[in-house]
Structure formats: structure tokens, C-alpha cells
Length: 347
Image (cartoon, helix red, strand yellow):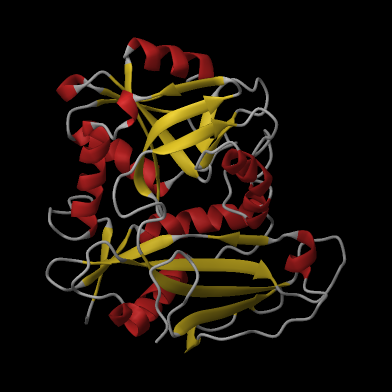
């Protein structure tokens, strides 16, 4: 079995496959196969026209040794919404969950019992596989689910990252595909990410594509701002405008923060506000979140010639609280009142 702790470099032994055609719809049930290469026509429509959507979700080993996948139903719902936006067939939720069960049942043992920093990352993907270059939605699609064992996307520790505010590039446009998890959104982000690296930063921060002043996302992750401290601290995140991804982890943290008594707000925050409120001490913490990155503190911001630190450049207490709360839930150390965990039989 090939397992690695780097992100997306080495894969487990199996994958799940299912096909759809305009004539027959979804053909049968998801099939578990050995992980391996696939043969496709060079005229495959997804390769040329970008009808490709995907998801990312994780399975964790809980303290009792069982395996649990976090919120697969929410990922199944978003997968369908992404497919709808790109004129692709929507995979029924029960088939999505069946594919998850089959994959975890086959390769869950790749996740060791003695290292809670590791998880099994699942990558479902749907792409147009019809060999036709007509400018229309494809009439044949392939669904795949594959996975790998991974540690944290940035680090196993909550080390703060530095970010570059992108003034040159936009991630998405109104009416576009910003709220869909489609392949083209990520390819278009690579140049901005390279600019961030050239500026000595870990990640890029996207602004709204119209006024270019409102903070939207960090790379492929949602952003949160903490105002104040202690039990009265407010947790603020940009609203879902249609140009940013509705993150499952974002939704989870809004629920967890409210349950802990914090005021949660979906509110537009400008770069000017972010800088001024960080300088005044009103914004005490900023963190990003996502399936791969979990909860990651932002310690420094670069906006052209302006640079500022947040919370002394160290991870803040609420950031760490949210990170621990999420990890505790993943690993079964606390109850799951919302039914977010899909428990898999066997170990």
C-alpha cells in the first residue's frame, strides 16, 4: 500500500468509479477498483472545455479506533450544486455516500491508529469523458473517488501564515463559477499564488471582483476575523456573495462559535478596515479554514508597500479554541450533537 504524509503525492490502493451517459443515466452502483491509470480519448470534452468539478473531505480515526468521515452529506450537496452550475449531471447523494463507504471500507486501514495528526483525504471528482469537441454540455461523464493519507496542509502545528492581498488578479466574477468547486477556479489562482510566494508570503488573499476592496477568501480557504477577546469576542466572516466558495468547514465553525456563546456575523470587511482594526487592536485574530488546512492563523498581511501583523503574529486563543474544537469533533473526543460524523463499521 502506498501512503504518504505529504499532501496529494501518494495514494492508497483503491479508487471508486461510476459512469453516466445521457442515454442511460448513472450506470449501476459505484465500483471499487485498484488505483490505477485510466485510458481516455484525446478528444475527451473535460480536457478541452473544463467540465470538471470536485470535492475534498476527510476521514479521521477516532479515539475508540473507529473511522468517521466528516459531513459527507454536506459535501455531497455541494458536489451536486457545483455540477449543476457547470451543466453536468448531479450525482445522487446516496451514490456519493455509497462511494465514500466503499473507499473507506477498502483503504481506511491505511490510517494509523497511533498518529492523530493524520487523516484520510478523499477526493471525489466528476469530469466530462465524452470524446467530442462540440461546444455543448458533454453526454458522458465519469465519477471517481480516490484518496491519500495526509498531515496538515501547512503544518501539523497552528503556525501563523503570511498573506499577500492580490490587487492584480480576481478569483471569480459575479455570475461566474466562484461558488462552485470546479477545476478552472484553481488553475486561474496559480499565478496569484506565485506572486504571493515571490513576495515572501504563504498565501494570497482575494478581494471582491467589482470594487476590489472587500476581503473574500484566502487561497482556497474561507477567512474569519475575531473582534475583541474572551467570551464576548465576535467572530466575523465575509458573506456568501456568489463569488466565494461556501465552505463546509466555514459553516461548521459558525455553528461551533455560536454554540460557545460568541456572536457570529457574516459581514463585509474591507482591506482598509482590516488594517485599521488590526492596528487599533479591535481585530485581535484572523484565521483561515478549510478541509485540508483545518484552522490556520494569519499572522502577517502584505498589501503593496503596507505590511501589518495581527495579534503580535501569534495564533490567538479563539483560533486555537476553534481548531481544538474541530479536532475534538473529528476524533470523537466530544459528542456529535449535529450528526456530522458518518461512522464506518470495521477498522
